[in-house]
Length: 416
Image (cartoon, rainbow, N blue to C red):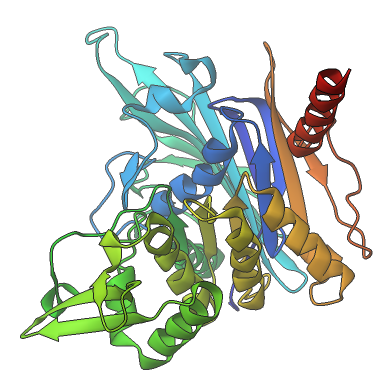
């Protein structure tokens, strides 16, 4: 099959998202909202799903991988379920496509507490469904017994009950599913292996780095592998250095000694460099963002998910980071999803749309807000060709205007 692109994500009873939530994915998808509204949870569920699809051979005794590449989704499976129900069930679904063809993978994962060991629980893949426009296969376990077979149905017709061995959320070979599923399963696994995630705050290794540790296929959510990517590729190194020089007026260099190297930043004293992790926090925090942006177009299908790309930077640089991501936006086959609190990033995106440098249909903004007793809700906001927001919740990014009014009121009161 051709490269798959993520088009839609659906989830039910996941953390603060009660009921069913559907998220359409654009080439640039932006998550905004108040603290503790569910932005990070929504961003991370894509990584949770993908890391449980791309497990190596022999890996994954349970369906969902709670810890992967530096992301900790929960101490136990119960942490993933709305209201932390001991017997809760979590539903996840992705719709992937290429051209007019789409394939959907849906799973229900059950938390099972054994009466014999009430202090322990385990994940169980309760149901699994793979379908496209013409075919559909389902596997449903009708008992909580971990040894119970699955009822297999193909295009609505029941087959014999079968045992299935899973590797995460995908079946191990041999499996009882029709032959047409193999190519789709391989495409789903390939897409999942291309999902990258950057947490916030990101972390730089303080000790000297060694070239022997370079693992070109490994990605770490803390951004710890970014220096090795920088060192190993001349084009990437030149792109990152030019961007730092243009935006911050600072040169990023590499100092080597034997088999060790350090990344350095130009200090305020001419001819003197300091280790990048010891320079301004913003310069170090944005380094993995720059590496991710400049490598996105050669990564193939997948997703790049970034928490707060503006972290530790002066607001004046927020717009420049937004432009960095947009200038290197791969498109639908590799969407970029960002969680942000930055008004300046949104303003620059709106400006680039108004200037015709970015199409309005390439961007979706989701405002996430907590609803007491009902869980977090999504409000989808589009941007017009003129750069205007289709709608905007009252009071969002309104604080600066309110502060200006308060200052003026205080000044008038003093004069009076």
